[in-house]
Image (cartoon, rainbow, N blue to C red; front, side):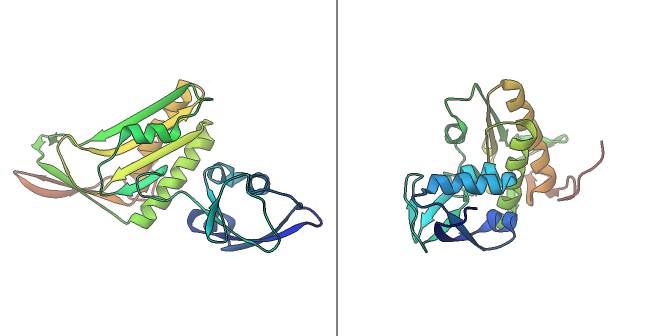
Length: 231
């Protein structure tokens, strides 16, 4: 922080509140600083949160502001991390998923590869016919876990952006339940990060699946949520 300048009060929500360990953060920036300067400063002060800060929206008072907006003394700055709803990198929704939208969200001109995975409802499982699946979630916690997985994948595999979109509710055979999209400079990293993220979300995220078919219905169990198995 600088010795003198503009004094700000930063409000933090959701994953950023947990990362920073507070819902309100006083900070001081240089005279003439912009939202972009504040974003850069916070990324330096909190390097573990730099990836999510890069895709966080900033609001001055109650209005969204771009990186060129000037900061003024005493203004309240709200940091709005990505939210669900079909246009963010992390989505839990009843709506149909759009793989092209997820791809668009992660693509950038400095990337040479985008890996996209689709989870699709199939018509059989373990020798039994499947009519449809029903997905249920603890949505607030699911979104939080998906965001943490995306951020961890970005750090672990040095990729640029990760989108994880999961659908809940009733899904028919052939419908898409999951879209995972990863952009990176090189294809190997995008493949590895996508594979790891999909495997990890199945073990961590509180989303449950009920299989329905001619022989009845059954909740399918996997690895206990939040518990990672060895090997």
